[in-house]
Length: 266
Ligand code: ZN
Image (cartoon, rainbow, N blue to C red; front, side, top):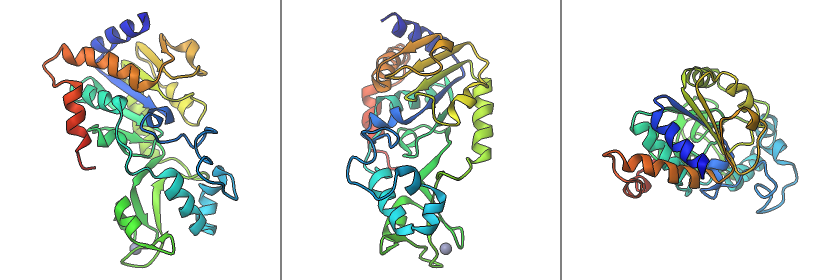
């Protein structure tokens, strides 16, 4: 409980919070972590490991199998923001949070109302034609499938999600902006990640601020460096801590906010 009180105090004092989030943020919206055993592989069996099926080479050589896997295991279009997404959106609206840096591709932070979201691994909501480079929404992409493969309605070439596949580089502009925000933050909250996935641990080295906060169900490799560590689900923690901050301001309550946000069109 003391950690919760400490976290409340830090959030109240902070003016430039950056949140760095991993798969654990999305699992509370019922999106499985495809790197964990209970995640991908749970629905059906595939002839190749996940790392192979979501690689750039596999996309090029086996587009049909790639998209079968992609649409059934990586796209959760009906998922809704959970209390973690909603609390973070609220902190941004209050002017306390500068940016969210995320490894998730589901767009749930934006769905909750967050504006400055840096998606290190891209997004299922941005898709581009490999021929004419036109952009398509997820819905348009699903509507334009031929034998399971999304193709461009203008030029007929295959569409590709702007999701960083194995064997592809991260977007440099996104990485640089993430570093800039982390370097300027007074408080860095790291949530829902065990920090083993590249480039998480590397990015955190740029943090020079006062408070490093780790919120993760399990221990992480950075626990020894953090000044506040909470081993509880991220949604639970942020909901409890943030609601006390919101109720002390004139802002709408978390309950009201969640009602508004859940109806928001992405
Ligand atoms: Zn095209």
